Image (tube, rainbow, N blue to C red):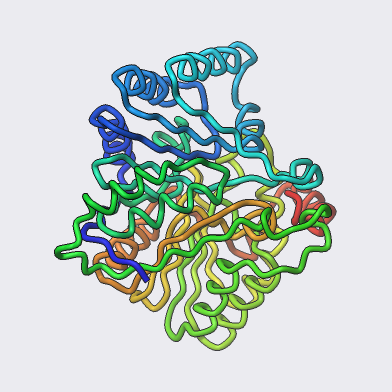
Length: 383
């Protein structure tokens, strides 16, 4: 257990971006930032410019990028933009910034998309922004995202985990955070769930791996204990079988279950993620689960149970989050954490971009998608 003295929900896209940029611009000693990828658009450029300026005025800047995530995100960029991104990163390095591209130990892990997916931004001010957003226009003008800004003793715990996702953390910075932590009034109780499966696997990586993922296992435990309601948001909902089975069991015993994830139009580069999710639609609908697809894209990761327990962070309900990517979630029963999540859920229910999936709708899908869903569904683990 850990505590926070403040928890500010950052559902509004402009509010989160302003807070992230202000943290960098106001930093005077150190700045840590981890991301899945950086897109060289107006947001990536603005953040890199701010990081370079911070390093030049004497801030120790530490940027951690996932190598697989950056390769995946590179699909969205032209060769010219990828070259410009590399030039900007080189400028940060030349100024003295530390840039790390995380790559798991074993070749099989790297080939199959192993990496880190945790988004942490912290400075000597004693605050961490933690959640689902990447440095991309998609995160701040397109998809729904959810992050929080937290202060207090929890900050040190979050930054310590930066090491577990391939980053380097100066112990002196951790000690400094202890000094500035707002312990008076730190009465928001939180749990921090973290797992990097890459560090638990051998040379075979995820192939044949049957190890425990503490995030997956604890989510299953909470879902099994649900009595009234479960609401889950995820980029594309395609969980590992034990998690999917727990959700269906909950619906079967009368728990109201809602899933909010992305419509196929939200990811123009490929339909594969949606096809992997749609492969489980028949089972979910048969159990009475209400599934919604958001046309703009639902990239937040929230699990709200019985409206008095919430988890949020980076963990998508997908196979990759279980056996290939480092993921983390903050968990709380405090109303200051659960109430914002409940308000988000109510907003999603009223959102015209949120479309309810029905059996009739599935039957009306284009033949092309119906065939893809049938043929590729068995391979959803890799999509």
